[in-house]
Image (cartoon, rainbow, N blue to C red; front, side):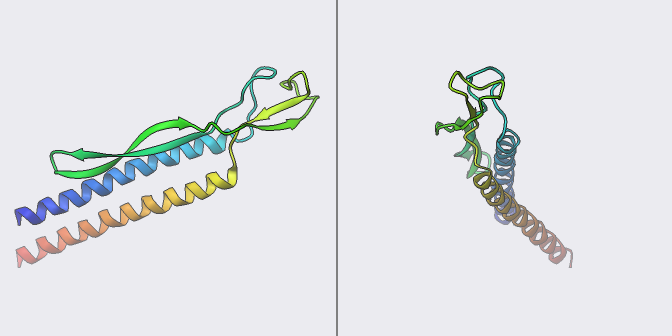
Length: 141
């Protein structure tokens, strides 16, 4: 039973790390979506720059298992969207306004992917809990 319980703990820890990582990813995506149409506060300045979450693998020494963590949040270096809006107060000398390099369709696709990964990890936790409960029920008999 000791080996089985450590396998259960390992499964739960790995899935929990996935939940944390995907929740962090969804926070970053939400920030991108919230700022998709923002502009600079100053004339000719740069607007919000899209952020890209990364993931890394780490060894959990207590469980002797690889877990996932949310890595660095990196700025997307792609070009800003530029619109000609000479009446806009933040337009540059040429009448152009820079908008964030955020594509809402890409963000929504990423959000759906993160949500599915989150749900998959949640299902693993639920299945593991059911297996633990069944094991305990068998041992009681």
